[in-house]
Each structure stands twice: as structure tokens, then as C-alpha cells.
Length: 412
Image 1 (spheres, rainbow, N blue to C red):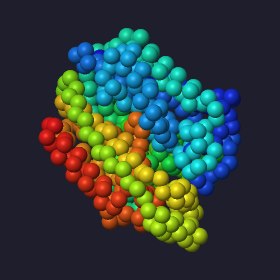
Image 2: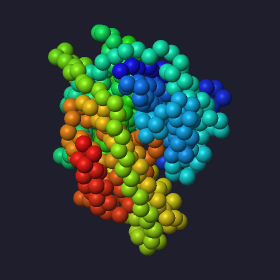
Image 3: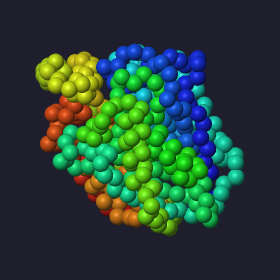
Image 4: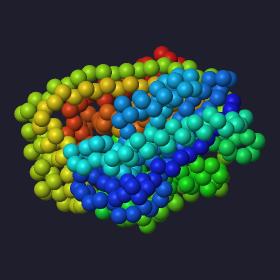
């Protein structure tokens, strides 16, 4: 097995500044600075002649048409199976807007910025293929984090606090890596007006400090995961505090990585596709209920989150059909298996899916290629802000997860 990795900077330059930052309907001001650079990090694996391309982009999201275009270019140029090309995003809420019109119907990207990002993604992949691939062996470690983040809808609710690191090593040197964790990259609040990759960027820089190489970041089933219940602030000091505590547990003094046997990839595809037609009466009821929650919010956090839900509910009054097209891939590499799901899946479902993979190193890879939005649980449906304005019928996520688990078991 061989590997090559390279990162290209996607920090907005002067021609793209100031810009609007994505992720919060309550934030309407333009950016006023940069906390840390943003990157598009590519990692290309060559396993007995079969190549996989993983790209991690430090933005809140990416559209399917956009990523499909990039994936098709990579497939056409290098002959890589498109189902072995992942373009994920770390879901920071402090990066430039990527849509022409933002998620809530407000101002979008600075013209030309996403064209620039595309060039940088392709540049990173091109350099991976042009430079020498290095012979490696794969190692992993999984740590359960305490005291940093949990289910943001209640500390008592199911949550995935595991962090998995994958190291590709040539002898004793790490030459490429991946870090998979399950938490929103949203320590910085809507008051922040500076560009940042937030928690995902902190994790990547901490890995780089340990390994000497910047990793691909894969966010898991983090739809209902954040540091809300442990939060002591929402500024850079809090980001540094949470990030340091988290990564000191990942790279603890007793850490021992385990070797994996990596085999040629076996790919199986799963798709769930349904179209829902919202009814005006139900959408109006949603809107009125969320509006009441905003007006009666007791905390800024509550007002912040339901303001975003209210903006989505207002758009929902148009009652346009909702096309839920969930295109997933299950990739078996032997001791390492990963399931790609383009959604903000709630963590309890991610835990179940990883268990079904039945391998040493299971990875649930959410926020990848595109997103259909939140996929929440039946008990909290409508009560949590993630599902308050949803067009997806109650109980759909449970049905999808049951299908996925059966699909994985049949694929193993």
C-alpha cells in the first residue's frame, strides 16, 4: 500500500474579503478578519493498484452538483472509481458562505470564491498524483473523550464520544493521516466575525504537531453533537480550551496504535430516495411554533438555534416538494471499513451503523460529498431545533438506519 498527501490553502484572499460567514441566521454582519488559514487536504491511497481519493475541505458544506463535478474530473483524469472519491467538509460555522444565496435565504458567497476553492481542491489532488507515493502500513487508535462534548439536546441522551485516528506510516514516520470524530465544529459562536476552521481545524493542527503532517478530517454522525453543555464561552479562548483538552486525551501518554491489515476496497452502494410534499397547514404550524420559541427564548443559545430554524421554516411556507436523495457508499478495506452518508445524522444512529460494520476500525463518514440535512430521532422529532422545521416525516431516520444496518450485514 502506498500513499500521497498534499494540502492547498483556501483562505479567502483580499479579493474575497470581507465575506459573509456561513451557519447562523442570527449573524448578519460581514467578516472582519482571519483567525487561522483554511485548507483543502487531499490523501490518495494506492492499494495494489486501486486508488482512493479522500479530500477534506474546511467549509460548512458543499453542494452535490459542485462535488459531483470535481469527482467526475478526478475520475476522468486519473481513472479512480467515483465511489472511491470522497470530498468531505468539516462543517465549521466560521468559514465563507459557499452558496449563491445562503442556507437561510440571505447573502451568499463572494463571486468567484468557490471557483477558487475548486481550483485548490484539484490542485491538491493533482500534486498527490504527481509526487512520489510512499510505501506505508496503516495503524489506528480509538479514544473515548470525556468532558468536552456530548449530545447537545441533553447530556443524558445517546452520544458518540470516540475519536479514531488513522496513521499511514513508513517505518516510524507518519506520512499521512486521518482523524474521525463526532462533534459539530462550532465552538465559536455567531458573535465571531473572523474566518476559522473552528474545532476541526484545531484537531487537524494538533495531529500535525504530533505527526508532522496535516490530516484529512472526517466528521461522524454529529447532527446532535456539540460542546454546548460543557461550554465556558464561545470565543477563541474557549476553542483553545476545548481543543486542548480533547487532543490531550487523544494523544495521551499511554497511547498505543494498533496495526491494521488493509485490503483492496470492496464497494457497495446504498440509496434511499423519496419525495415529500409539505402541506401549508403543517408548515404554518411549524413556523408559528418556532416563532414562539424564538420570542420566548431564555438563553442566547436557544435564541440562536431557533432563529436559524425559523429562517428555514419561513422558506418552508412555500411548500416546495422535498427530495430526499441519500446516496451512500460502504467501503470495506479489511480491518478498516467506512460508511459514507451525506447527512447530519444523529449520533445514536451512527453508533449502531459502526457496530454493524464488525471490524477493528469502523468509521462513520458524514458531511461527505453533500448533505440532505438533519436526520433526527423519533422521540425528539419536532422538539429539537434540528428537526423543528424538517420536511422529512417522523420515523424516517429509524427506517433508513434499519435498512443501512441490514445492507451492511449483507455486504460483510
